[in-house]
Length: 98
Length: 98
Image (cartoon, rainbow over all chains, first blue to last red; front, side, top):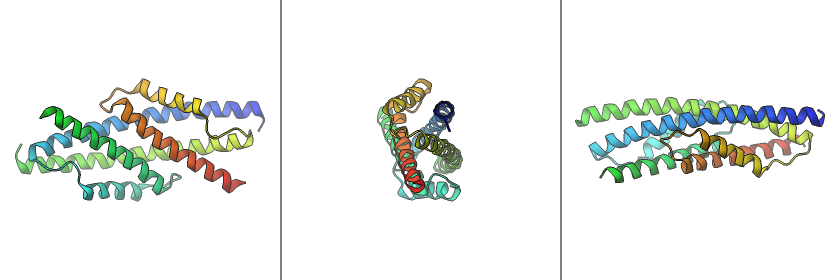
């Protein structure tokens, strides 16, 4: 591959990445809205925010569906970050509503 | 909200979360495939994997498109994890192909 064609290919891939990222972002916000709803229900029922058993189910769901090429351990670390951020958001919302 | 209705609502939300997660997973794998392609091009052109300027563009793209409710700093931390995992995958693939 010559340099010019390579650089054009790179630029093309980056447009695709930016598009995928915007779609990931939309799903993160969709997930946050559902998590906020869960937070409201839990507050009403005085249930704990942190439920390790449910988090295990979340990891089981994604690893069962993972067809790669991203390895399971990498996927799991990304979801650990997502879950951690959303737990923080849930806790902040609850404090605000108290 | 009574307890029974609350628990039913929770179960419903969890089905929605599992569905969103499978869609996030599909996009993570789509992104990984593009990143692998970028890795191949960079290897041919002997360009560095780590490009801080490009990473700034990625963050600028997502924060510009973020309509919430997930705050920008939380979104950024999730994408930092995604980018970090994909950089590792890129580097591993390159070692394998050497």
